[in-house]
Length: 309
Image 1 (tube, rainbow, N blue to C red):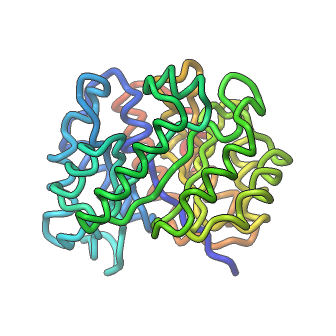
Image 2 (cartoon, rainbow, N blue to C red):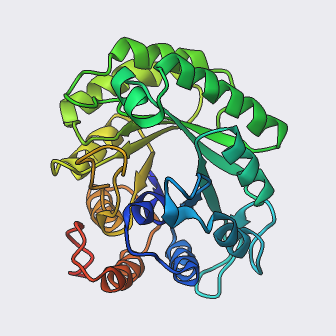
Image 3 (tube, helix red, strand yellow):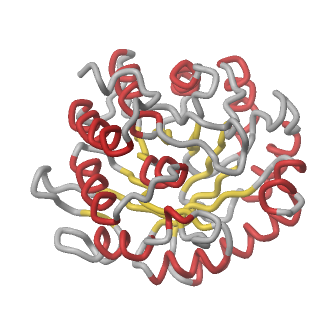
């Protein structure tokens, strides 16, 4: 039975989207419970300026509790929890510039998530950079991460399109895959930031990119149009073994209008396990956390299964 590795991104990609401030102690408790559910990876925060993402202003406090406390190695991997057997959970954080990389290292992480635009209009709208400027910055971030002993995931945004399907050239995606091969990446991530992908488009991109990368390929897919789970199953059939998911389907991107709806962790676990893959994640335990988050936020979340198990 093939194993699929899930990275829970709700504490970063989900919480950042919320206007109601989430207390730091609640974040920490929920992240610990998610780690105890069997999730092997949790993206716990982002090291960005609080002016732009106020919900992430407590990044150092969250990291200190998770990678510096009892049962957690100083290198950013949680080795045990009172509710789970001894094992390793990788905690990572997002950085969008060199300063963010330095903050992640100072906070004790060993894995940092980097991200760059692949669509010229998106690059201008989101970071006021061309794609080439973003790629050059990514190279500087990777160099700094290596100097600080950090392993880095590099993520490409809007791979399946920004304003319309296909407006991100496939040739650009393959050029970037070639450009960053051989740089010792921890992983290489492709994001459907606006939820424009469908299974044939997933297969088309993977057919082009998989032969070019020399690091594990990760997909970060959104469920904006209701095809997130179908896209994950199509990618798993094509050989992808790592995916980002978010509890209850929380999240999106606050800088892309309408780009809501990460694929719900519970829905993905159910679909993958039912399709013969192994995730090692306890669906009931993740759903319990999601229900607590939904109660705190005071609304129903987009995920289908968390209220049914």
